[in-house]
Length: 175
Image: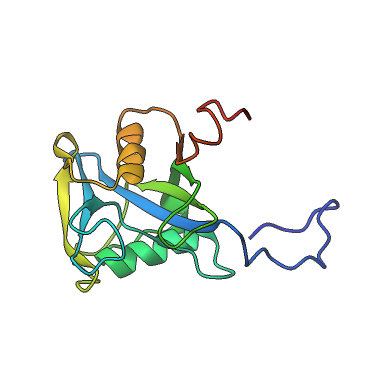
């Protein structure tokens, strides 16, 4: 946990409420066998039913984003990663989302070390979880996380924008 500095008074409360929903996703990447963990959203999922996705979920109030990543990965897949084994892979800034009318920020981490066996930890939400070859990423994929995964695999840009084009051009400047 970060220690207070001279320019950061200790009297300030942690930012536990935000207009922007904070989300974490994890790319579990088995470098040796060239595969990643994906899940397919089930018919009762809140959005993107039947589409593939990364293990992903919302941050709890007061929870650090690395804690969200570790918790969501374990809950959804049974795999366990240590926070220190997470590496920043991509950031997605969305103007709006299903549960985020004021936007969302998804921090995508990559992990090359984990323990546990892959299981579908949330069968009511996900139709399946699977190891997928990096050359066989399904087409039926949630667009924002697919862009993050492809960018990570191609060593491309680390930031992507979703639904901002109408208000701002891709370079982020105001019209």
